[in-house]
Image 1 (cartoon, helix red, strand yellow):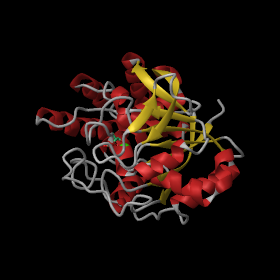
Image 2 (cartoon, rainbow, N blue to C red; image 1 turned 120 degrees about the vertical axis):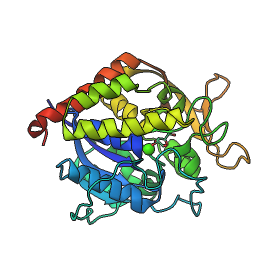
Image 3 (spheres, protein in one colour; image 1 turned 90 degrees about the vertical axis):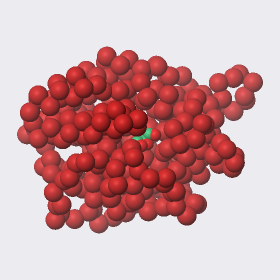
Image 4 (cartoon, protein in one colour; image 1 turned 135 degrees about the vertical axis):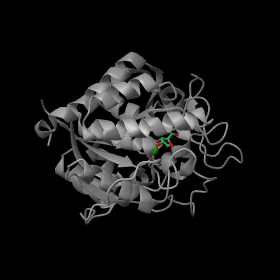
Length: 316
Ligand code: BDR
Ligand code: CA
């Protein structure tokens, strides 16, 4: 099998961590690097969580540190972190690795890999789009070198931070606008679809029974999420893992190509992804938008990927 070179840009995060594990055990992917960004929690936590997780599972994939704040805005204002816990991984505590981060920044790592991969590199951002926008601005030739970007963020309808806005896009709307205007082929896996990608206690039991260190970590995170849900918080929604799954196998969702832009200035709508689902809008479609989920196929994919951890040496 020819592996597809990808970079996963993440703000690890509970559901990000599960996405990373599923990606690490997906034989279709050649993960060239993980790049980290401020998002669910501060950059120091998203970066340590990513490095500690990847090294704890025995992978030597590069982890490059990215942006500590959005492109233009000074900071992301959190109103407490009930979704991911104070340091991002819920109740999971990973051993601190003494291995270093990659010496280059996220932006320079993306550019370096884009050059190395000769037009084949795909990006999977599962946090705010800050690093991607900064890379596009720093390297005007990058646009021609990225095969596609499949990102978690936005929604055709609704939001989870405000009525209109999803977290990843709300956190850095200017970055999203730069990415939408970049001309790079885009697929948006938005909240209205990822909200349907929930795992249950039965799914958690099946994953735990796989028995590998990796599967147990996933199950522990899922238990935290299910407990969170029981207390009135978000369900065990696999926003980010679904995005990795869609990159590997687009048929997990139904998609339509639309013109999409991001609202940056609205007093109540900042971070809204405007999906022009009307022919009256004249701009050319620039982004595939996921609209419906095949939940059965998604669950089969994610469990299959995690089950691959039992055959780890084949993928290392
Ligand atoms: C997105 O925000 C984060 O909470 C999740 O990791 C996901 O990337 C969902 O809005
Ligand atoms: Ca995320």
